Image (tube, rainbow, N blue to C red; front, top):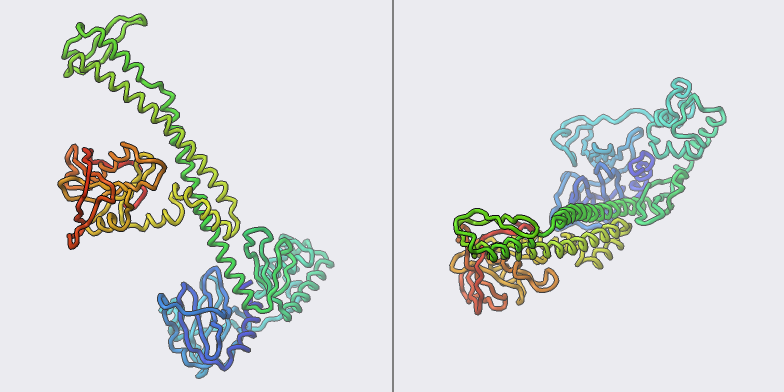
Length: 554
């Protein structure tokens, strides 16, 4: 009911008593679709909202103009005095009559809401929105007066008996609006779906009675807001009269209409923001859960296939037992065994002993891969359990305080899924960020100055620092505090591979990469950007490559 005709009429009367004879000292906007007017000798600012979702105006006592992102509008009205404030007889338009015959017309027409400035000949000379399309046009107000004659409804019911009484009520009294029409029907005990032909004389009389009672209450308005009884206590409806059909909601009364509107708008926006933030977290965790479930399924399928380590061992031991029967250049050899013939695949370029060693090495790698897959499966299941636990907790959030507590108590866990302040900070960092074995993050610089920023300002003493040896390239830092335990050999090799990839030697098969702890890296005074000196180092030969796990800012 923010833009209901009767609400606007009450606002117009109240504003006339408060800003009549006051001079406009400012007209500006610092929010989309929102005009702010300030007045001489009045601490309150008048907020005019032309947002499609919020069509209204109200006084705000603690409103201050922002230093930035604020623009002056309707500049010619500043310095003019308000002569009167009134509502137009048949329309949702509040008119501010200024001196010299100029008027400010605030139109509350949903998505077409606007504030027009018209001269004494009704010519539009300026507008808050879409000025180009409306300036120089003639403003023509709706003609007529509001007549509260219930006979008009009786006539419509007789003429169109198959139409709902709800729709006929709104047609008979155009300024009534859906909320008040619904309230009249509720008080009379008539369904909103009831057709005119279904109405008895008694129901018509009750309808007339509730209509008359409501009009009386509108003449003595008491602002109120109906809010949900359960958290997050979302505002449901603003009204200036009692809404009996909102009996399932808590009713909160206000001594001042502007205070009630401020409360309703503030709480509605707050609830919308809360729901949006919580929904975003839920969606992110849900996506991670689905991805983890798919990955777990794939790893489980891989583990169903028995490790080939035993097969490779059998090839190797069979070859070692029959070295005399195998010659270099053969592609395979078949030998008898208790379980039947064994055909051993051979590399024709290798000797029999080298082929046996190759199969022993394959057996070793197969066992290692199998063990790593089992270990990874345990980790994945643990991560999935955590994601599902966080998801359930996020879905239960109903208050702003609950969201704040959830984000604080679960910050470290949420960060694993890219949620929270730390994740946000990483997104804003100007570095390439990767995830290597064990869940450790690796940050890579993008330029010489960026390398300095990473090494000197965004690295800790015990972080591991990497750089391609003897070639220009990115500074690369393995952040040792981004996961549990110590970085594995594989994690270090992956970090070295990143440093090799982002260097002038990226096309080489193997690149020597210097590795040291950040505390052993120093920048000489006056040295060019990106230039550092290592006090100690270890050299790793790495293949230039990027890991699959990438956190962002690539």
